Image (cartoon, rainbow, N blue to C red; front, side, top):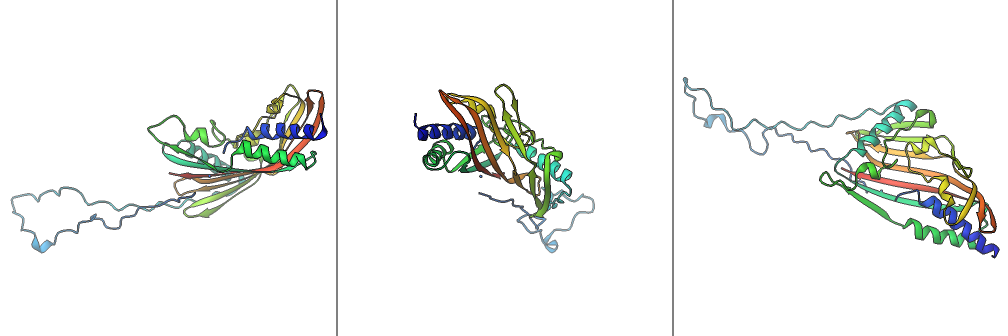
Length: 285
């Protein structure tokens, strides 16, 4: 088997295994409906036109009480300190996971740079694998209260679980007020997920807020893996929270390095692929 074919097979194995762990975000904003007319659309009757009330008769009860004006939503106070910011992030994401009616739009992009694998034929193979596996564009989920086939919990990361990010696993976290709510930016500490042929070590902080591929998945496609690693050196999370405490926009930017050592039939494999995965999510309630 030629060197080029060997290289192409390896890159396809790495990329397809990595991509299988990820899922595939227009912001319509948050609007308040404030009615400043306490009488609705009908003006109160002129008092001079009303007939005098009989002294022995109680005044007639109105058909309905005047409508109360809607009260503006009180702006939320942006949390301060890493612990408070992370707690606010977990709370907002988990509240959004419980939404019964919401439209969720997800868009994902992936940039790849061959690591130990040289460019050329390998670069072309990487582009082909990306086009066939990631499907450019967006995916939209309409969550409705009268339908239970798909829930917000199934769509938002970490899929099927509550967000439980630990502030001890965070390198930096801050929040800034915006439009009655706030914007959260969190940078995670560097983590490595690994597989040694028998045991898998997960990236605990990342899996507490993201859905990531399992290094053991690199065993697929006929490859016998001796060891594999998925390194995440500088993941950044950005979340926009509205005045109701619900997430309206969510972005995960995940630089990564994937590598393995193993065999493909009689070929010995030892290579890596680097890249950046970005997922944008928009939620409209």
